[in-house]
Amino acid sequence: QVQVVESGGGLVQPGGSLRLSCAASGSIFSINAMGWYRQAPGKERELVATISGIGTQYVDFAKGRFTISRDIGKNTAYLQMNSLKPEDTAAYYCKMRARATFSLQYIDYWGQGTQVTVSS
Image (tube, rainbow, N blue to C red):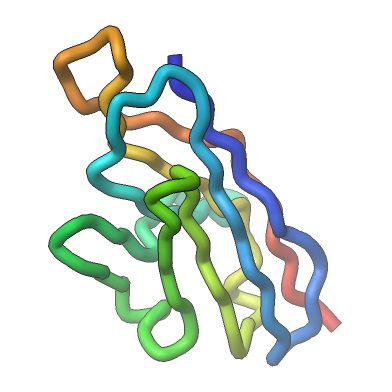
């Protein structure tokens, strides 16, 4: 199996920064894409950014403020968030599109989420 664990969330003041991390472990053959999503209370989960061998993609609200990166050797993804706003408050989830060693297919593995609260 593949486990995904996020970390780095917390309480930050408006205008502040946070760096989220997402580590995958277990029986991993390879990971071909990583992504960050978020879900605010009462709202649907939404895409924030993705990274793969093709490159990076950001949704509009993340452009210029958030940066996604990865360390392939560590099976880890990062999300650097700057100039945070109260509306960025949400649970942030990581998704790894991975192939386990016992499988021939790539499937999506999700973490449990890390809470980000932007408030003064």
